[in-house]
Image (tube, rainbow, N blue to C red; front, side, top):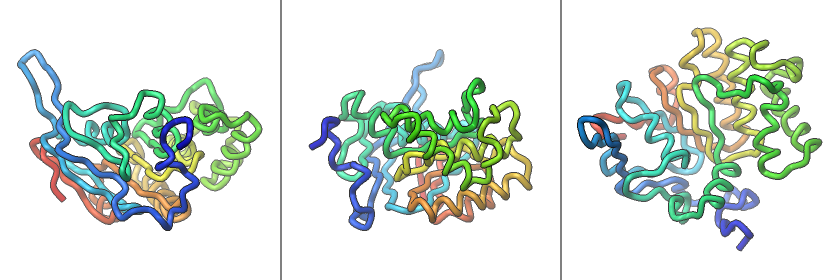
Length: 242
């Protein structure tokens, strides 16, 4: 077992040996306290996501889509229930172990990019690699490769404010992929883009899904994008179907 106690989720594991189910929830519930009392957003959610499966998560605004994504991405904890990555109960891990898992195994793409405005495109993509302990030369090489693959080889030294919305989202996708995660989690990745730019992001996501052997979970209001996924989960009144 490695120093993080996470040998079962080491990236060096041959992907052909992955189990059918990569991510699974068991009786997952999330509640919040409001001025009017307890509000339950997710109710006893049981779902299983297979390795390399592409999942769309849909539902009305406020239905709990982002809450579910934050829990699956270990950015938030459930009120009760479990979330398993292979055989690992994620929320039983210590904080540093969970941080390590998130850094190594998950990539995130958000609607509003979440890029650091004071850093260049190259530096933004380098961040996860630096956090993981790679030296600056290694991190820069990894980031440059990803930015070139996403068509941004001429934008390495540009800061986010100097990039278009589509270019910023490409930087965000490159950042999500720099450590070759097994799961890509995207929350409305085209929600802030025009239709032409969105088409380019759709195509890029299709390509990286194949090239990086990803499992992809994506919140979207876009019916066209949802139809391109392998399966759609719908959230209504705190329950998940699909």
